[in-house]
Length: 165
Image (tube, rainbow, N blue to C red; front, side, top):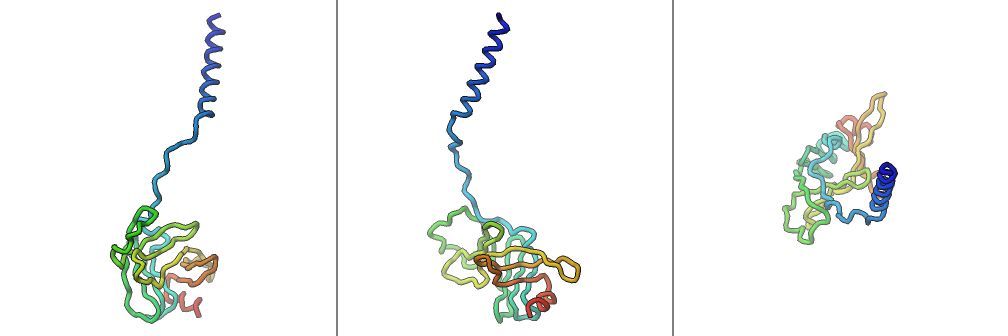
């Protein structure tokens, strides 16, 4: 008799436990707000060139800074990466003009400028790909917009000159 009561009690408790789990509403706590990247991924950290010489587009990406050379300039402009929770506040213009942010978007990293009053020519979405050249895999950085590749950066000036003729 005691055994049947114990088995019945165990079955009832187990049944109530399962129904309690099924009947409870979903988790009501929200995940923490997403933020921009604190550092660039290691695959992005490199010197990237679109052509040889001193006048082509180039980017020097480190963990927390990007130095960009655009168009006919021979000097690099340095930008510091800053992390911030998303979405951005409306008073974003009060920050330093040389601060940039980076955020993941699908398989790309979007680089943008904090202060909208200044234009950043190399602002956009970038992804790192590999390509086979003379039986060796080489890394390349592609600027992507709407699924189309706008520009391709290579790790050396020689490779950039070869592919971007």
